[in-house]
Length: 215
Image (cartoon, rainbow, N blue to C red; front, side, top):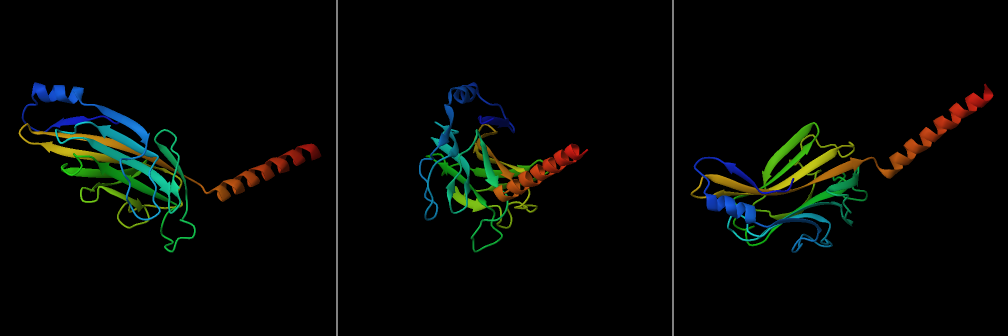
């Protein structure tokens, strides 16, 4: 799922390059990125982190993705799933902002030299991107901002799949090397809505039971 991918686009890959791919260390973890310097009040942690010791000969590369509650902080993931509330950011000055933000990071010696940093966003029935974030390698944003996902509905319960991919055109061999990290953001009804559903369901059960007793 989070592995280096080689795409042949012309020419012949050398045996040495293939060996380098096999020996290249590629590790995954959940936790901090190397540094997180985005805005005031932001804290590090709980990222889906993919680390490559030597990306396309450019040096080390670290890719990170996470979701957080807007203006509050990071969310504990379950595997690579982040569960967030539907609806707006309560108390925000902009009512178009969703309850949750998505954050990305690309660090390391290779980060400044890669050709592209692609972000794609998809749901079971729609997709958006890819967006090239090469000039904005670390940031926090919100789906409420125009352009990320034209059909975005902050009140809709669905799953958004995010994939952050670093890509480098390897000069001289006609190949592209890429590596990605990914996450799913699972949007669920707000707790108040869930409580209302539970109350209504309980009321229906009581009504049915009383009718049975009366009969």
